[in-house]
Amino acid sequence: MVTSHRFTARRRSLAATGAAAALALTLAACGSSSDSSSMPGMDHGSKSSASASPSTAQAMGDMPGMGHMASGNGLADTQDGYRLTSKDATLPSGKQTAYRFTVTGPDGKPVTGFALDQTKRMHFYAIRSDLTGFQHIHPTMAADGTWTAGLASLAPGAWRLFASFTPDGGPGKGKDFVLSRTVTAPGSATKTPLPAPAASTQADGFTVTVKGEPMAGMAHPLTVSVAKDGKPVTDLEPYLDTYAHLTAFHEGDAAFAHLHPTTEVTGDHGGPDLNFHAELPSSGNWRLFLQFQTGGKLHTAALTLRVG
Image (cartoon, rainbow, N blue to C red; front, side):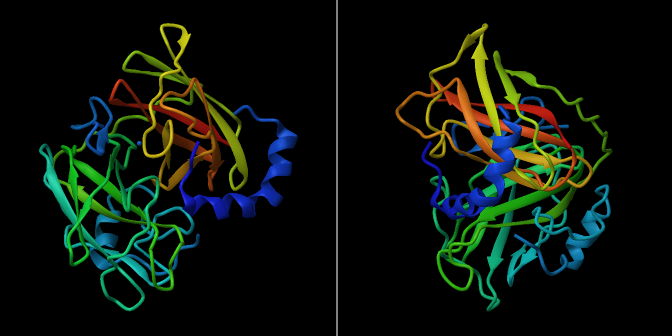
């Protein structure tokens, strides 16, 4: 798979420390086709530094375990002088809406230069506090650096919104950032219990199976296999410079992890087995969202993975 340049250096630096452990264990271990995706039935219903802004802190009070900023997991709105800013602390529930935000640099000015990552300059994610309603969006940026993310219908409750990007200049040039803020969708919120950990799940008639036993804070491989009607799927189409995109969120605090693909894209069709480099910082349950494309249609499968 042709992975984005931003992950190359990271994998090399991890090779010396992570490869031995991974080999010793011998593990076998984010819609629509228009740059946005949400789970069917869910449209309703690096080290961080500074703390969140007052509006963010207030919204975070509604999310379990989110009264403070964590490090290395996307739960801060500020890192190394870069800040995710927005005037929106509340978004309407039950209908499509636009979320507008800006990334400012250490000089306090809006950043307008971003490097491509898996064909996009910004990846934007939305997840509710109970890890439902997943959305993966590629927002658009105005000349003044204001981004607009078109969100599908939000169920009432607390949501965390993540911006994943790499500056193309300035002191943070070439560095990966994942910053987040929280918003509240008004209304009576009903919590959906997290499904139990499982090795496989169904989505749009496909069976997705995950193999691997990742350990918190360590680099491990995961293998994802896709089948349909009991037969291996070999017609996965390239999507975002890969055959599948895998994102994970931690139960309790919604910490973020992007599992980087390591299977090379070698043509117009791939599968059934896809390999990922997994670094999940915390133990516990993680909700995985796999996005893959066949016949021009984007599919999203979700399952719960237990991390020791």
